[in-house]
Length: 176
Image 1 (cartoon, rainbow, N blue to C red):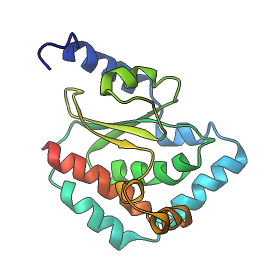
Image 2 (image 1 turned 90 degrees about the vertical axis):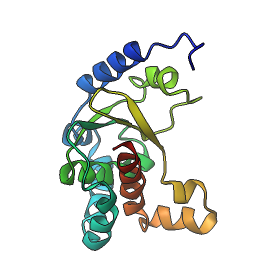
Image 3 (image 1 turned 45 degrees about the vertical axis):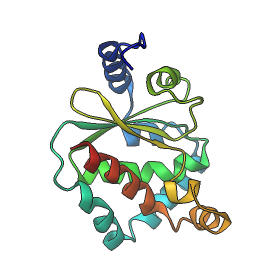
């Protein structure tokens, strides 16, 4: 990476600026249509019935220090965002992690900053206290991305909402 003209100082400054312009989960949700908001709230209500699984998913990151952030690119028209924003918001309510949500269009700098080919949403970057990226969550939990038809169907039913929390807490725990 030393021969790459990429400036981490500039990148951290850009991550900080993107985070600052982001919305809270509630502000983001309120940008949706009544139907979109109702769909997202349905997934949120389903998630809230899974408290034991949520606590287990949060456990690996219970000892993280202050200063972590989750910068999320999302849109209210996106079904994957409806499923994944509630777990991300819940994680940030229960752990010392701040969250900011930007639109996919606002997230275009993330392509260069993270080296991904295309921003699929939701696209979340785990940032440490210095706005250094420590990991990515892209579109769906790893168990769905790496799984088959059964995992995709379980995801679509809402059976894997806690997997989003597990994936992000794994990133947080490895960043300590």
